[in-house]
Length: 354
Image (cartoon, rainbow, N blue to C red; front, side):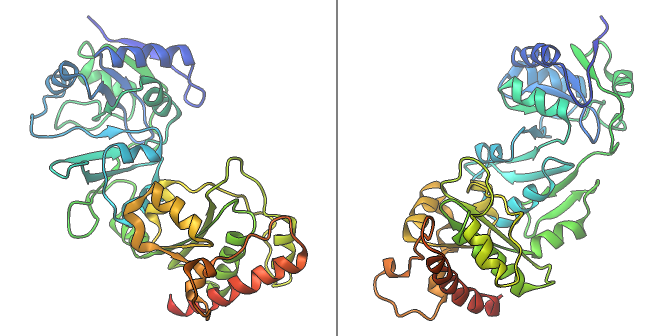
């Protein structure tokens, strides 16, 4: 019996077609689908019969695992507790995209290959399936990975249930595979991402400033440090807020005090703290003890990377609470200037350390 072929729009996949194929996957079926690299076969990782069938179809050894696809960066945390910042720097830069990372599983006794593809059909299918997706390339073991649905069907017509055809893959080669179980992150299969690109990301230090709304204190800190770093490309600077629910600009007062420093923050957009941002940061500088508690409640394993910003200032220490940078929101321009002065003192010392 021939495989049913369904043509689907590359950029705006029809929801009824996605829902049909997702339901088929949940029930144990096999579906050929497109990614930006090559075409793959999707199977429900939690369905033992589906995975056994996938091995038979692929002619793959029991000892060779299948890569798993996710539709959101944060889903990596469902599979691994690995805590190296380089992993999260790489997925923050290259996901969605042609990067597969090999990481230890939650209890450390096995490994997974994980990827977030950059293709609307693939992402919609993964999201709608609502189950972990095993997804090797859609070819017999040893054959060239298919760049189109037609190429995939040369090997697999009649062996899988459905094939989603959205035209040729834009990249046409398999994803790069970076192994994090070795001493250093190592490209074990080179695709669109090279070892030198991985090394460049690994060498870059990431500093994250955190306040509540990411509209004043952390914005001042981010933009002041960026100015002092100048043209340096070996340090990435970002900011975020523990209480951000909708993206917004910096406060008018913040934009004004930074403007007096020769800094334009008018294009700033707030972002919420999330586990990927926190795990990728080498140094996290918070404005208050409460921010520190909120962060460590979310990701306790990064404790040794989290400091109060004013720990780096020439401040006479009393209690830890004395090191808080008070929130100027809703207060006078003078309070904003005073807040900027506190932050600037710490930033001037930090820049000498990095």
